[in-house]
Amino acid sequence: MSESKAYVPPQVWTWEPGNGGRFANINRPIAGATHDKALPRGEHPLQLYSLATPNGIKVTVLLEELLALGHSGAEYDAWLINILEGEQFGSGFVDVNPNSKIPALLDCSNNPPTRVFESGAILLYLAEKFGAFLPQAAGQRAECLSWLFWQMGSVPYLGGGFGHFYAYAPEKLEYPINRFTMEVKRQLDVLDRNLAERRFLCGDDYTIADMANWPWYGGLVLETLYDAQEFLDVGSYTHVNRWAKEIAERPAVQRGRRVNRIWGPEEDHQPERHSAQDLDR
Image 1 (spheres, rainbow, N blue to C red):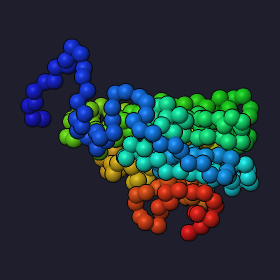
Image 2: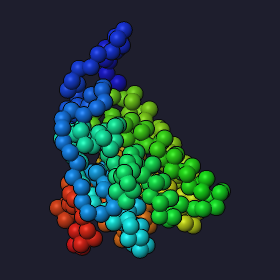
Image 3: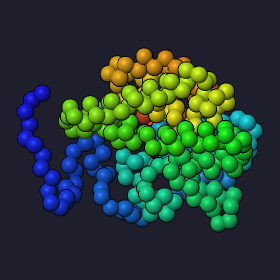
Image 4: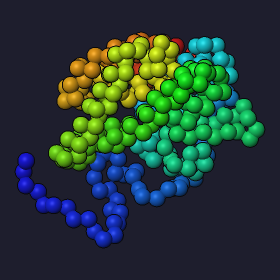
């Protein structure tokens, strides 16, 4: 390891705009709107404002799964919020999510409309609203919620930790990459041990726990996230791979992962979704 000058934290930290990294142009240490922009509204009960990141995919997969079950009330309009352009800081979006993160949901079947933000909260809200993909028996429900909240608590180490320092930071730094690689591999081992005895995370039934975890950990082993499969030796997590591949084959998952997507193969692009026919290709 080459020698480098040790960083000494200042007595009081001050923000230096554009201090490096892929997202430096949109990161800032304060909340609130940066510009006035109203959000569009479509004709369906549910209005989703999102982007096809792993957190966004969780919600569109659930919505497509609900529609596949015949829940017509789950029809939705999906509007693109391009976080790379700072659209999450528009006044309308901040009104729906004061934390300025995608996804955000407005349920217009209620008067006044109900706002829901944070992807895990949206999954739980929709599962309870439609009575699907969330077990009702106390023990099974607790197991499902445990894996849902496990994902919400664990994935910052994968995304903001490993993903940032491995893929997006302006320079490769040994200590943070080693630190977060160790934690991500531990998380994969947690999942692999659990899935060695279960078809899905909570047992035989596919739930919102799977939908929450799949875009992140499934994406990691299926070579769609961070291009780190060899580095992490993801092939060694055989049960996670089996689980990830089975979920990836579900038609609703294949539809949901395309919604609000603006990168990758052109045939997968679907910046907005306003009807089932938008995904019929």
